[in-house]
Each structure stands twice: as structure tokens, then as C-alpha cells.
Length: 143
Image 1 (cartoon, rainbow, N blue to C red):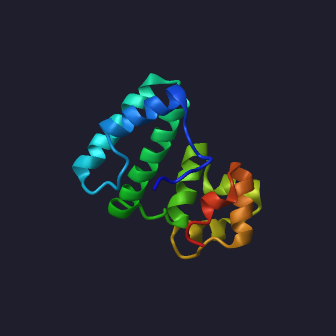
Image 2: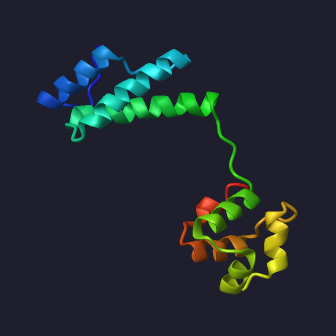
């Protein structure tokens, strides 16, 4: 029994997709060795630049499989509020005093955040996101 779907590839796009799946099947990655091979396949595709529809679909699916394996085996903890603020300040080359002047956030509050003694509130997240021109979601990892 075959399943039918409106989601399909035809012609050259189908051929390129099937060729890739035959060479490196789209299946859950189970080992670091498979992960390395998946990265090699992805690198070869990315180096080529412009891809056809079948190649793009394959690359998207393989990227999802790689991300799932890496999330499970190599998860990265979110940065602390202190680490994030310290990084943003360093990237902009500003001091606590400058940040305080520019945002009207008391220097003592900034010091407490940088010292890990105080988490960022929603209000501070919004103020810092506006100042650093970031989406607030970047700063809410620990909220």
C-alpha cells in the first residue's frame, strides 16, 4: 500500500534527493561516527552553494537529524545573566558606568547582575535588549 501526499518532488529535484538519500540515508543519528559523516555530507552540499529543491529538502532534513543528536549528546547550557551582560558589554566596549548612564539602570544593579547576585527582571531585559539592539528572547534564557 503506498501513501499519497501533496508533499512530493518531481523530475530533477526528485532525482537529486533520491541520490543523496541513497548515499547517506535520512535516519536517526546513533553515534559520533555517524554525526561526523553527516557533517561531511552537509559541508559538501553547503560548499556547492546553490542547491536544487531536492538537495535543499535533503539538507534541511539532515540538519534536523544532526541538531537532534547534538542536542541530546552535546547540550549547551544557556549563559548566565552575568555572562551574557558581560559579553554584550565587552562586544560594545563599554563599562558599567557607561551602561548605567546610557540605560539609566543604577550602576549598583548592573554590578549585582555581573556579580551573579541578582537576576535580570523583565524590565531590565527589555531595557538591555533595546540598548544592545537585540531581540529580548536572547536575554530570557534564564528567566
